[in-house]
Amino acid sequence: MKNKKKRDLTKMRTPHTYVIIFMVVIAAWLLTFIVPAGKFSTTEVEYKDANGEVATRTVLEQDTFRYDYPLNKEFVFDKLEDLAGNQTELDELDVAKEDVEGVIKEGESKLSQETLDGINLTDDALYKLYGDKIYDKSEKLHKTAKIWGTDDFNGFGFLNFVFEGLVSGDKYGSAVGIVALILVVGGAFGIIMRTGAIDAGIFAFISKTRGLERLAIPLLFFAFSFGGATFGMAEEVIPFSMVMVPFVIALGYDSIVAVTVTYVASQVGNAASWMSPFSVAVAQGIAGIPVLSGATFRLIMWFVITALSALYLSLYAERIRKNPMKSEVYESDAHFRDQIQKTNEEKKPFLLGHKLILLEMLVVLIWIVWGVTQQGYYIPEIASQFFVMGLVAGIIAVLFKLDEMGWNDIAKSFQSGAADLAGTAIVVGMAKGILLVLGGSDANMPSALNTMLHSVGGLLSGVPAMVGAWAMYVFQSLFNLVVTSNSGQAALTMPIMAPLADLVGVSRQVAVLAYQLGAGFVDAFTPVSASLIGVLGVAHIEWAKWAKFQIKMQGFFFVLGSIFIIIAIAVGLQ
Image (cartoon, rainbow, N blue to C red; front, side, top):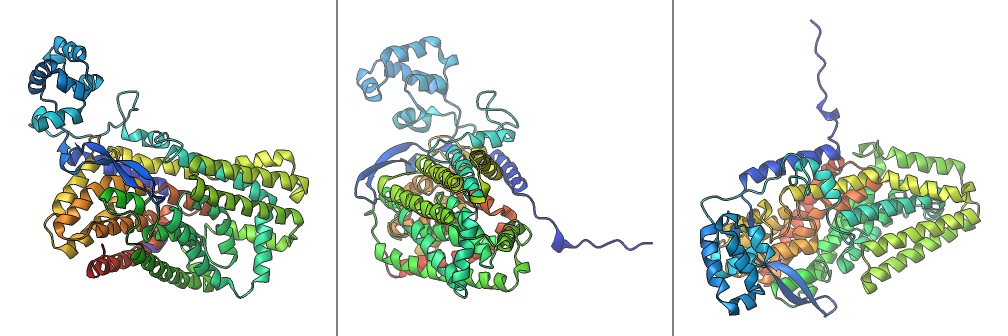
């Protein structure tokens, strides 16, 4: 009998990112069969933003949670008849008397919430008037997607999560906006890479800075962390990674170091920020505490966490530099190493055209930073700015005859650059689909996610202060696995966590701290983060391989976050 060949478990292939996301989608779908849907009423709150100007945000009202129940037709129909005779109340509700009479005329059997919505008697309005008597509470409803379907045809089905995820949102955010940004930036950098300017510039830099490579990692980490701390840098990292990945690999490291020194560093800055307008300012405004208060504590925290994180990365980077084969992405990095080797062998000179392109890139990057920080530029403007960067670089290359580039080569390079990131753009839509399967992140729409949010709030009430604060941090970290928008997470969680902090005996400032640490660190790990997936796509890293490295770093971040939560309580952070 022949001996069976033993399976080498160390050589098992890691699942493709698409496979992982699909399995998460299935798990999320099954969860909606178990967890009933719930919703909150919402309200507009005003707060002062980081610039001292009054801003508004739609937030949930903590005490208005209710499960999704069928309408109690008999009770509501009786109240409609009373309402029709009360003109004062109709005026307050902005409801026309003839509309109410029209619904009454159709009869109780045809009464539905959709009909009532049509005359401005929304679920929130009725709940405010009559409480949960408007519901038939004999049955809790579940918001579970069908197996297949579209919003326009029989309702959303989870097998259509890719398309629905891709077309969700608008040009200002996930997923449509970020997908468009990724494709435009990919095309722009396709042109820039074709000119050879980046390759030539990298080798010119390295040849003149021999022996100083190790300083690059901590310096870059601090730079990107500062960007995250000051203006919430996230999506903006995607184009920067186009340059940083080949640069870091040319220094002798791997693409994991490149992603960590750019995107992860920006999220470390976000997590420990003292002034980010998209996280700290929004959360503090919703929590009802002075915006940008506690800045001294946070500034110290930012420096300490950034320094320790840079040290953590430097130790990993040095290990990879000494033995590149130890890298989890050694094989996928071959693409970049081959390109670097080819450039090195050809010994391309660093020409005037190359220098002009790099100078033009620097000017556009300064333009972008100025636009984001001073003018409020966001995804549409940033995408357009990078298109200008690529187009001008292409024109310079043609005029200076770099690498024999012609006008058609500009178009072909843009096409191939966008094609290289098409797979990444698809992942962004797929990741958004996970949230859609859970029912979405709208507090005013019934979903399993809202029920889980409410349940956690109930579990934390009455626990000791230290445990409560730490549990808030744990919850915010887990919640960020699904909802990765910093401002969105603040709008959903802070209206519950702020008053909950009062109940458990910790300051609301600590509640904000727990939110920002959880929302920042986990963004560097979760496959639902469109920005992370975009950067991983640039670096040709599968999420599963990234997770093997990042899970250890997340443990490191979690320990740091827990320590600063404890310190904040010990010093009485207010």
